[in-house]
Amino acid sequence: MALFVNTNVASLSGQKNLMDVTARMNSSFEKLSSGSRINSARDDAAGLQISDRLTTQITGLNQASRNANDGISIAQIAEGALGEITNNIQRMRQLAVQGGNRTLSDDDRSALGEEFSKLANVNNDIADRTAYGTLKILNYDANSAGFQVQSGAFSGEQDTVTTGNAKLASLFGQIAKNEIEAGTIAGGIDISLISAEALSALGTIGEITAAYMIQEGQSDVGVAIDAIFGADFAAQAGKLSTMGENSAFAVDVDELTKILTTTLTADHATADMSAVLTGTGSFVGVAAATAIDSDGGYSDAQLNTLHGFMTDTLLDAMSGLVTSVDKQRAKLGAEQNGLTSMVRNNTTAVVNVSDSRARIQDTDFAAETAELTRNQIIQQASTTILSQANQLPQTALSLLR
Image 1 (cartoon, rainbow, N blue to C red):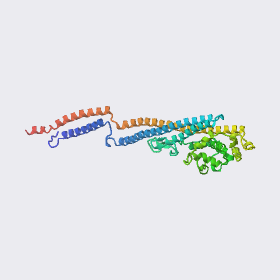
Image 2 (image 1 turned 180 degrees about the horizontal axis):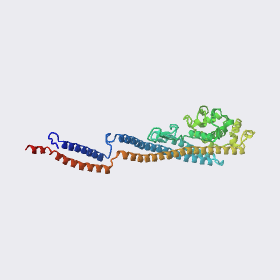
Image 3 (image 1 turned 30 degrees about the horizontal axis):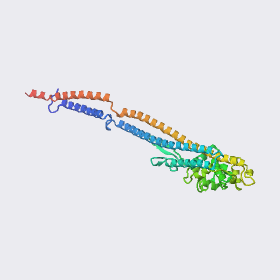
Image 4 (image 1 turned 90 degrees about the horizontal axis):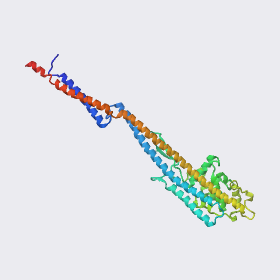
């Protein structure tokens, strides 16, 4: 065996092994102190890329859950306000039932009308004031297509919260839509072309208009519709469906309340009312030929019939409003349930994806501490051997003595 002084191969080998084991120990220290198996790309280049994609998914899912909870909050605020509106409309309907008695005096009806109009105005106020922060969610400022909620971690994963519009004009427009969907009235009706003889084509809106015309002794349909639903409604609205979309239209609560507060008398009949009663014949059951007595007034029997018609009109209208609000509430409830389910799904996904990422990225302390212990033993052994290897050149001195 050759003996060299200039080149101590054993020492160099010991130094190399000691450097390697020290590097491995430093890596173990880094992994154990950070808790992460991948602290830089050199630790696991492919694993780093995969774990970062999973991190992107996790952070997206967590934010999506917060977004969905915001959507649920909007729906809860809107649904709470609609619940109070429902209570008010139910009370308005109760007042209409009470007003169905012809035994009430003018003062009695005035008292009923005062509460009725106040509740109707309060409903409009609730619709105008209900907001999520500064975002109005129950009037014409609300997005008719619903508020979009990013409820997923990736593109194309959106849901909507449709709060709707709780203004009275919009709710009446919804009544018309419901009647069109049910086939009760035809769609695409041009309101400006409606005559007194064709009021029944407007469904509930036609009933309200007819009842208003009877109590006012008004024979002009356009004048009556504009009085209840705003100036030039018949000319501007075009179709019934636009009532819920055009902020220019609003129910005149005072005019609507007259249907409840007016005490019908024979004097309400005019020569021009025959066309109105013809158009409402299917509503009130009064034939046009006998609608107005020869003396120019209504008979007691006709007054009873017309009063019943006006009461029924209000009852039908209030029931329709309740149905309109309930449809909005039902939709909000379904959307809340959908978003709640999405939050649960996102939470489950976060758990599972985090578990997948942990298998790639997190330090296995059991394995790593075992590796550290092994390397510490090797380091100690390497240090000892290196010390001995460094003494090998001393052998050459013994030959020179």
